[in-house]
Length: 466
Image (cartoon, rainbow, N blue to C red; front, side, top):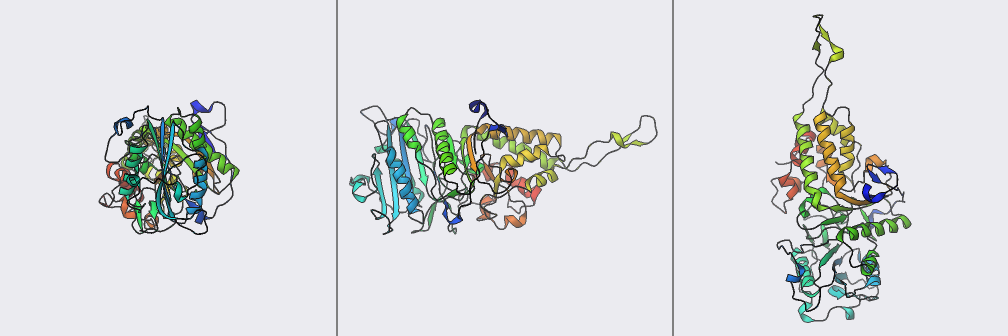
């Protein structure tokens, strides 16, 4: 299904306040579930640097192109065949005077693949180009110096190269590979990985300077909060992605209309993804485009909801005295609320994305049930409703198909969040310690700065270190 905001949708069947068309797909082997992309308009490319204008990076004698598309394509793993498939889609669009497409391509050199070579090379992609070594950038000053595509410094160098040699008014950055949400696990192995895992060196990127992901499990509130001040939009999947990943046909639209905004480009990415997996069902698939300028509102209102749940202990029925002196009148008793129980009850039916080791569920689905819960006190219901409204406003567009459970269990509304339903499930998480506030290895800003870990600890008994 693909959902647009009410203002954009016009006529249509509303589901959770958005236009919805559901498509059910067939199952897909988990071995082929994958990867990670990103799109941005007016994007700050480096984590440690604020750039207000791409023109400041390089003095260009001619007007800057509208867009520079920088693709960090790590095929140095089991995804190489899919990398070649996506390359063909990218080259089908090719660069123009207004849109530059540059790729840093890593390959393991599978002899069964055409034009086989191993290592990492850079390409300025022209229409119809093949990824042969002879077509790579040959200038010694532009060659890749470190072939470890799981090293964040390598990614940072790629972005610096892209800005220097392919400056533009707007940037889209694609990081293409496996993904595993917010976690920075040093011991992970396929299919649960950090972003851009390099099988040759066992290194992985974390906290990359991108606005979205062509990878598994990257559309979550933790990532959105991390990127809130570094990009305009996040584009990614709440769940697992098939090996084929994105349909890069959206680049053809960008080439035809280089005046496209970052918002429109994000919608185009989702539309091509929806069309591809509607025609090629591949199990449970999702994709969301998130307005990162609205993420702080989600977090603020979610914090209020969590605090309200923690503050509202169960209230028993309290008989009121009869004005006629004849004892208590139970029919006038105050209602009984237990918002903590309501929170647990609303969480129970939700299905994990990936599996229990991921521990993420759809946030909006939980808020929907919490607002409607009979045990939810009015203050908590109001706070949860506000959080839900903020979340829906932030979801620019989302697509989903192939959920084998109920729509309520899957959710698929745009953003997930870590939400183990018990301490037992928590102990099965990959890199559970990453959610401890005391963690110092690649700390997560959302964990450090919001009330969510405390809520999980206090209401669900998750043994986090606060």
